[in-house]
Length: 294
Image 1 (cartoon, one colour):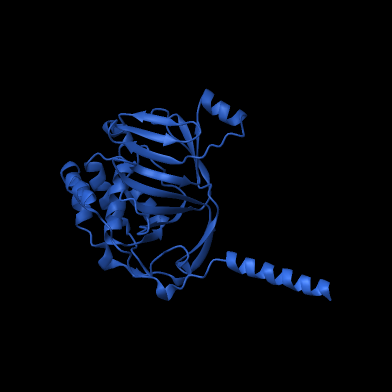
Image 2 (cartoon, helix red, strand yellow):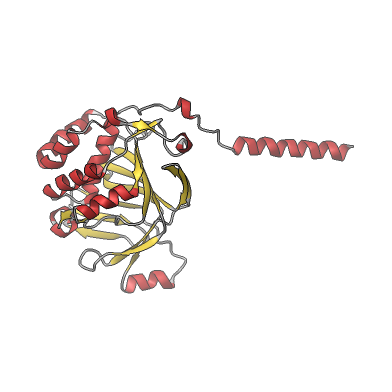
């Protein structure tokens, strides 16, 4: 009898622990249509400065009214998308983005940082098929310069996080890939390879179908303290070519994860943080690193 009572208590305790560890389901009906837009005075001043420095892209971004064109989100994506409505970018949206960014001779890191700030200002979540993004790159024959390549994209989600108190944080981005792959930069761009889409597989719904695909995650920052670009990156690996790459292969216990890729504005350099860090000097003043339309 005592054994049965003890066993029952253990089972009950185990059940309660399991229940406590199980995250509460997200109720779609309680999700907001938009997220609070939190832009401080310093960011507003930075926007005014960028309008002078980058007139084409800022002019395009300022012409957009994303919040007025959101559409209902699929309730089955409630764990992934923190709002009940999303903005679905079109091929034309991206084409105009590339036109403006290339006219200002911007790197992808700078251009994406400015786009992320616009998304944060409007409190929208951007979500859509990767094919839209890839079609725009092909249509404009865009050379992304030194950036994550536009291949095998299933979908992507860009969303602000009002709970993040850092004013330089803009959005979190999660990209799903149809399959992982290794991208080799040309030697004159960067003597390194990127392993793309090595994060844990996650599920999402798109066009009435469920997909489970590997991911990458990152926070986009824009500011003098944290730099301009990606931080807290997950799902991307880096490998240098040559002797350092050989060491990475031989010393297999060394991690190759890339944790950040940001612009140091004061020194005009790109800094990629990994087990073997990479620094690219004169990053924003070297044409081959910028977005170009051919």
